[in-house]
Image 1 (cartoon, rainbow, N blue to C red):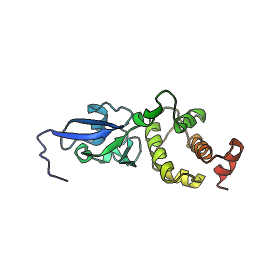
Image 2: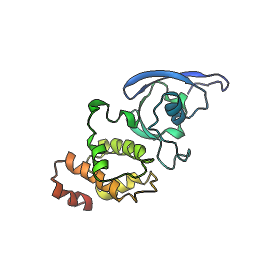
Image 3: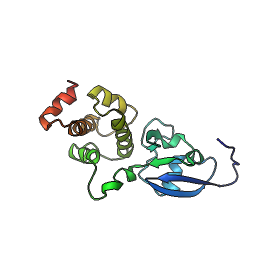
Image 4: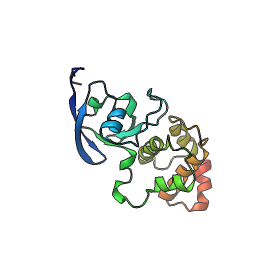
Length: 178
């Protein structure tokens, strides 16, 4: 990474949800703050600011990452996807992942939901047919104080079943890992 002077703003150019953007950031500004405060991507929630809670999870070049652990200047030239961009191709309807969260009541207060959706989206692209243990392991990087994770796991299992062509009655097999 090139050296940055701390006392001057720097222009950061990146692709945000498929759109080229550029804006000024100080050398010490976190990517989470840059996305929310400067670029208006308020779906990026800031919880712990230590990378523990997962609320600020975005996808950087297709990989789920904590935006609170990266400086805005480090995002130069990168492609960033936030929850706002999750559904940009079919803006009227929810994606299957979003619909499953709705159908299975996989959120309550919603603070953690954007980060969980972004992690889940990236994970299911890498592991298209995970079992329940794998889903729970992926979710272990997120703190949700409301749901107890059961409905989140059920929503993810429904997405896995739907994407792999398993009929609704076959979801039990996906849930149990059979």
